Image 1 (cartoon, helix red, strand yellow):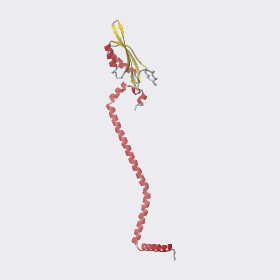
Image 2 (cartoon, rainbow, N blue to C red):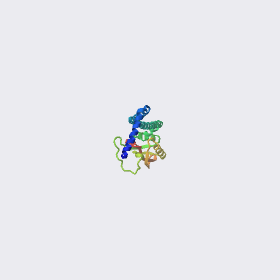
Image 3 (cartoon, rainbow, N blue to C red):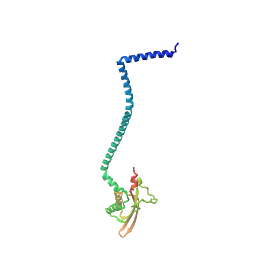
Length: 223
């Protein structure tokens, strides 16, 4: 008895021979099969040929989306800059006044001129005007420890001292004018004494105070 595999071999051999015979006899079957094989071959090669192109297209889409996000951010920054420029133009005059009020340098001459203007508006005799401790060039030295509170925002201070003589209303008016100077003055202490002269009793006022200024490094470090 022939083995089972031999029987299977003979059966499948006969089957494939019949298919081959039909393939040879029928042109429509042969054409259809060749078409299917051609399409399968073309599809396989097309997949391998198009794959790099598809990957490139996907990368281009990602780059386009990233560039759109970048353009949106740039547009937002441009709008912010335009808004900032508009605000600056509206507040330009106030900014100029602020730079005069709190300069980047001590500028003792401008302070003295403003104080002289306030003194000239009142009937006051000036005994002395001292503006000291100003570093006009270089790094300011550390000030000696005093009981005065530091100025806010890390501002440096220019010390001033006035000795004045007059009656009480004139001195009180001058103090009020000093507090309204374009450069703000922080009065640390006032000393009033009286003296008797040939013209009568006279008050002597000594004013000690400070005016702020911002050094360049403080301005640069501001948020």
